[in-house]
Image 1: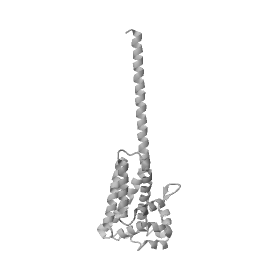
Image 2: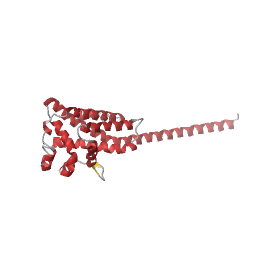
Image 3: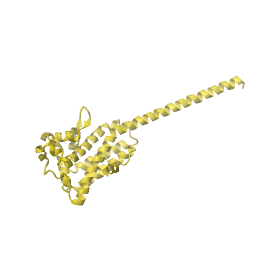
Image 4: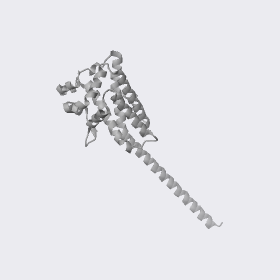
Length: 240
């Protein structure tokens, strides 16, 4: 093979290798970009649910711990029945009523995020059968509260009421209190208020534990797929 032929083969080989490297690099970049987009999309959709699951679990755990130690959760024993809210002033919502009503608000926000996530599942990019697992775990939470007479349809209604359109944000605590001050709107949240009153009085302990277990399972699953830390433990540590 003469010098010209050697040079030509060498040039072709070098070109082929260079093209191959460019293709591999481009292919890897596309895969990395898709993975980053998928992770960003999952986080944006699921992080709010993860946060509210931890908040609801933490607050209900306070009820459970107090009931185990003292037989009740005295800070939330501020009503005999939900309709007494109709006569309450803003100062009551901002003071005496906070332990009870903020707990109802946190659980309502959880319902809102589960409602939103259920609608978003087709747009999520979860590996394997994780989308089915997510649906099953949310259903488990719904069923746990339904066993407390907060029925599934009521949960969804509460969740929708908490979401403000067209902004898409959730009602603040103050906005939620203003909602409850309207008797015709409050009535939809009455079953949830009754539940919190019951557990504050030391009743429905098994139902409460069932809800806590379902929330813990959902929270652990979300921690895993979002590659986050243990959100329930982090929530408790934040109080220290």
